[in-house]
Image (cartoon, rainbow, N blue to C red; front, side, top):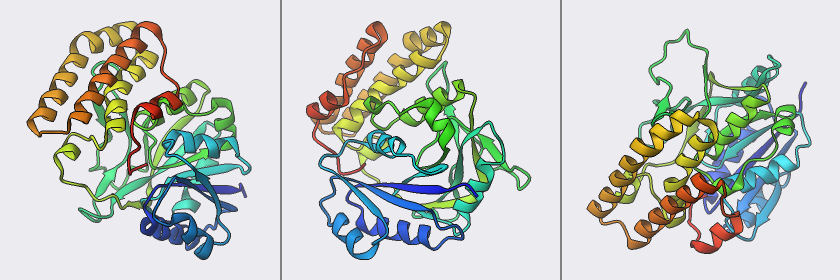
Length: 315
């Protein structure tokens, strides 16, 4: 049978990580290798792992370099036939990993499969996410219908967040993620690049994980903004994605009409909700960075982005 690695990304969520790993080791398919990529945690995560999970390989980053950077570390050390890139806020069903593996290797053109994400905190046993993509015309989220019937087995997707089970050969042909995108839309960028190599991504709806991230009710969270760095990325990456993968006409429609509306909406609501000045400045920097990319095709390197912003508590 194809061999499996699980690579878990974590930062300062020791208790969630403990539950996540317990669910992995308690499944019907025990992976050949489990790694944890710790993004500079300060809550004793590394010590907990060394004491309680002796078989887990721990990779400790001295700084929080973001999800894409950690995913690239894992993809650069791809020693098995497949790998699950997993965020630490998941409690996976006992048969999830086995179902994903069997599906992934059932079709040669499958490069990625993902489980159905269920709400684990705010509204248990309801669907949280089951895939989708970004509209190349408007930049809107085009999400798959959560109210699917029992006859629906899979959903195609270009959004591949949080629990991405990937085939080695597909990853090798696609290469690494663009770590300059940091997090938001980096997954869709990677999926669209993989499509060009002849591979597709699917959500397997009878493989399930409980997503344990509690929705915070702060004003910043209402806008999907958690810290200055993430706000900068949020303001910038939509234009980057559409410029890369949309047609010329699609990008012009987005750039001339939709993008100004997005910026006005978010800036107005940041002022309305009295977001910190650092968020507003970060958003404006992201707007400027998107314009630079549109006209030059250039993005600043990850090190430069990290230097410009203080690090968040989330990964």
